[in-house]
Length: 232
Image (cartoon, rainbow, N blue to C red; front, side):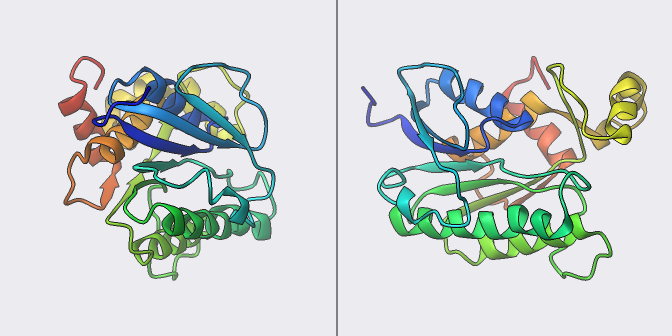
């Protein structure tokens, strides 16, 4: 049973690298009473705090309105890698799906806090030559205009996968191979997936750094060190 002090959290993208870590952390977090995971495929786990909602078409989230009612916070990790899908699909996933989910969430839980997984270099002006940067910037602008009381935009640089996985391209395979040296030389250009996930959940649920809206990689690392000094 959820106590009055515990928060109701909705999570999108729980099968992805950061989303999996966010789900695990939220289920362990005593500040979170319930976790509603909106997924396109079954998670394969069971937890008394977890409500799993299968939803195939994020282009239309209207049917999610009932389960999104009375939520205190949302963590949105849904996304795609550049080059993994055609450009039109990348924009659809990055921009359209985000806007549609935010529309329905705001209609059902207008006071929810919203943590969004953006990316380093996100361009709110729309002038970047890099499609990923333009699309993330467009999604950020839409969320800031959605009138949620708190919108937290996370812009990580290289996200280090803490669990084994098939890397999406050569660049990621290379970065993973040289991660120890890269972290030592450029500490503010890397963040562990589990650290990023913890920060996204904490700031949405606890209102940490409530006055901030944009967290660059350096900011995320600093947040992790303050809240979880043993892991930062």
